[in-house]
Image 1 (tube, one colour):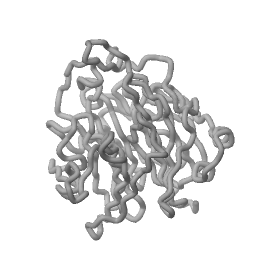
Image 2 (cartoon, helix red, strand yellow):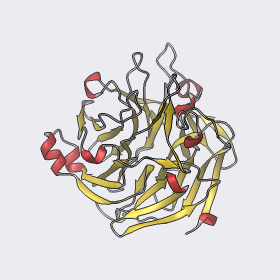
Image 3 (tube, one colour):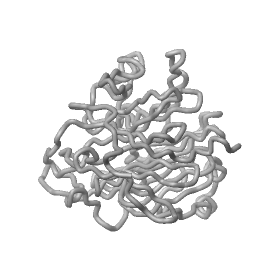
Image 4 (tube, helix red, strand yellow):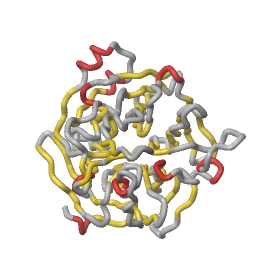
Length: 353
């Protein structure tokens, strides 16, 4: 597969698409990257170029006095019943992170779950999640990010959708921690510039997280490390002591530095290869690049397979050129894109979970 197979699905002249999700009927939604503090945080996108606030202006905008709205969004998913789940990251000292579930069929709020303070850290950065529909759980990747640009207490926050209870799991497990090698994109380290002018390299930990189509395994990794791990949903779904849970984690395969990934029924991991402007396939058999394009795939951010596994949807938003990740310099070259790649991934649709 080569870059000629890469299709432009939608174009964004100003906003940077964050993560994609594909609804059961094939419609595509994207979060709008929180790094630009957008007025609208979630959009429905169409190939004809139309973008609209999702589910509506009130809920996609900043929170109002009536409680509608979201502060900042990266993670967005759709469950098998067509309920759209949006992870509002909240606002420090003002609003707790919360899960907002929207019933697309009735165009109404289905549910809202506020994450309690006891499952968070002061540096919490609840940026992505997956839905375990069989066990009625949501697993949130809390990367955490301290003022020095490091993931200090990364963990997976488990939310029980039956009870609304939540707890913190695998905090500071080695596979969640930042890697030792600097994260370079286009030959430059990702770095912040302090008000005093000091340049500090970021050290990102847990970021990519995925669940296989049959709901058997949750796959995860550190953005700045090169390993993919997995844990059975049977183990992760229950509160367990740290030792027992750590022993349930398996090393799965090597990967490049990446922001997001998705996985098919055979454990093939579709990776956003941020250093190489590429989409790759990682598995125990090795790693290979599926598509590479220096123009279109500048910082491939999030990916999601459609329900049939035919298409892999990709957001590319040049985050490495944004001042917050580029030591204060803005080298962005809009537009930004939602792309798709024909992969025909095995999804285990004929299997009984």
